[in-house]
Amino acid sequence: MENDTNFTSIRLTGYLNLEFKMKYFLFAVITVLYSTILFANSFLIGVICSAKALHKPMYVFLCSLFVNELYGSTALFPSLQVNLIWNSNEISLIYCYLQIFCLYTYAMIEFCNLAVMSFDRYVSICYPLQYNRIMTPFRVGVLIVLVWSYCFVQFFILLCFNFKLQLCGNIIEKVWCDNYLLVKLACSKTSLNNTYGIYVNVMTALIPLMLIIYSYTRILKICLSSTKEAKQKALSTCAPHIISLLNFSLGCFFETIQSRFDNIRMPALLRVIVSVYFLMCQPVLNPILYGMRLKNIRQVCKNLVASKVGIT
Image 1 (cartoon, helix red, strand yellow):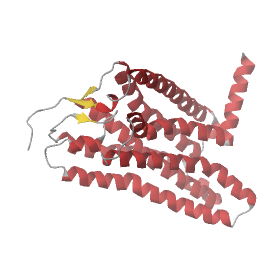
Image 2: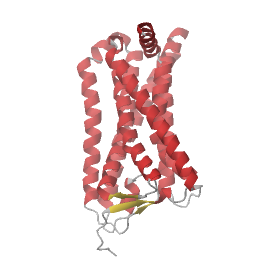
Image 3: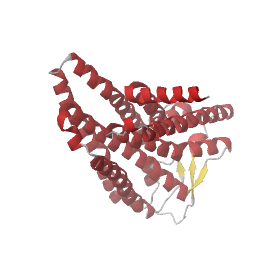
Image 4: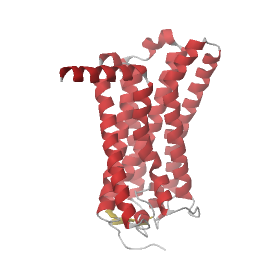
């Protein structure tokens, strides 16, 4: 039965089961994490932009990845901080839609960016002599613009379908607005929303994953027939990407499972951690992986620090 009530706010009840002292502890942890994310990702973006030695496709794609980490974390962390410190669990419906758009496009861009990076590694390792001809600056720029614009347009269309839904309730049992749970609150039919949602997931998650699997299958085939030095070089450049992909994919998988199956019982704090893991861990992990593992970035950072110390 349809409800004529027009809700203008959403209640996020994921905060309610947390103890008072735990909320302040989480606020402190979130503040430290967000500050670390802002510093680490901004620093590496600055390093890549300022160092001519890093003006190569691989590092340009990394720069896009770091920008996305700033984008996704900014859509989540400030709202968590405000809701925890103000002990409030109610946000406006408009802000809920905005957060959904930002967080979901963040996830979509992350998968697509990782797919483009895997293709870059595939060309670099499998076709080294043709790499500069294939991965021109123009094509790199087009790929980055295509990834961002495609994800924004695809999810904006889905969100437009959601705007037309009439809500029968306004309670979401999470600490951030979830599109799936918001659609479940609708009184009206949601078949079109669900169908297009599946299409968006396939186009921005499943297909990029298939491209990544194909790229690494070909890379593995080449490495098996290469010298030991070539294998080590391929591993050093591909390992951070693989770890980042596995971490993000597992985080998204566990979040999807716990969101769609209400009968999974777990402590309130663990449920909150699972729901924000893929949004919190990835922006911290990527700067560590690429900043410490990739030799060229590490060397530029050392030179930058040495020059600053020398000046002072």
